[in-house]
Length: 173
Length: 348
Image 1: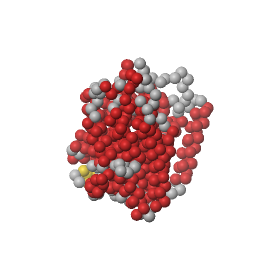
Image 2: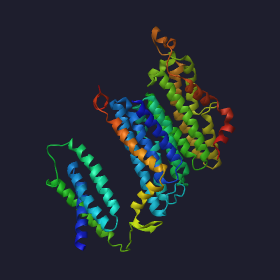
Image 3: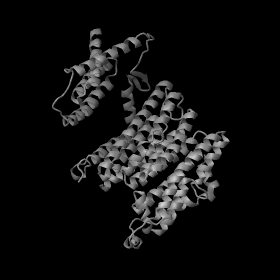
Image 4: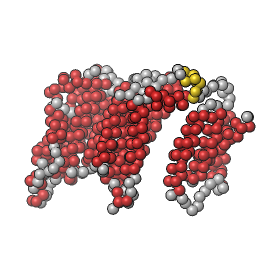
């Protein structure tokens, strides 16, 4: 178990360093997948399975996919990654930063516990975010409608903004 | 733009402000602010020119930065105090951050640089919405939060009046001038917020009336810079006669309506013992008055050289209805004798 936790934390930190040090958005997105994989598995192991599931579905499977497709349009010929010396040195620098931060922060040994769920009302020992979503659908009422309207509005606003052909601003006729 | 789209966007503008105005939870307030931001983006970009797109992108970046700061401060407050009530925000650091985030949303100095540039890229009607309606939601939040550092609010207010006046001096584009005038007026509102919130509402309402008159006047004349304004006297002699008065009302001269908020604010500041602040702010308002006077000069006090056919546009009937403009100009010129009832209207 200890080794599994260590592996997941390692993937998390390595992924974060990868996102920070890669100038190419494709590689950064790949590192983001690594971050999400490690972080979500850690979260799920501590009881926050709902948040981890939602993150995988919506964040990775929705937003990151759209981001990757948009980024694919900007493909360049000479993509730099961890292979070049400059970027690998930057990544090593960030890793050093994380290690230093860990050394500084680990001297405070007031152990704080964090919880992802509790028992209250009719929900027995369930995760906070799960209960929150349930409450939104249960007693949310017009707030749920307003939230759905907000999502619809953003879709329509984006569609209106990127309506192409002669009405786009990038191609001014 | 398709009428269906227009209806949806305008409805959402109203809904967003309404949600923020009636909220007691920070997340709901944030949701209303985000609705407003997204609803106005297609309206801003409807001209489809690169300048309009640039203004839209700048507005988006600034507003989301401010909304993110707001979210961060409210989450920090929730962590520190355990609750999300807007009026129960107790910790000073999130309070200061919220004030700065809302100041960025409004366009108060020193976070004002985006406002004239964004306004310059828009047509007059969208600029009007940006200058008037979009100020209501952040102000409702600023009025509700508990008292924060008085130094912060006085600094924001005074610097806004100063930068609004000073920055507008070198402008020839009318939308930028209206942008700087907006910054200056917002400064007056913030200055008095911690001492007499009803006066903030009074200043906001009078400002909305005045600036709507100016935007609609420029829209009617289709004048985007001082040169176009100078030759617009031929279009409507009536409006030409009234525009300098509205401009002087914006400058805060008695016996026009614009004098009322400045009078009340200066009186309240001196009552609170802040006479030097009051004096310096009144002197900084002189800078704004200078460019309002320059506009009145160009509009009605001089006749620039022109040829004979150009003096005849008044013969053509304009399709744009002027009823609302007439009401606004009447209100911006003649509400000062009604000051007691106007001020009683805002005292709650």
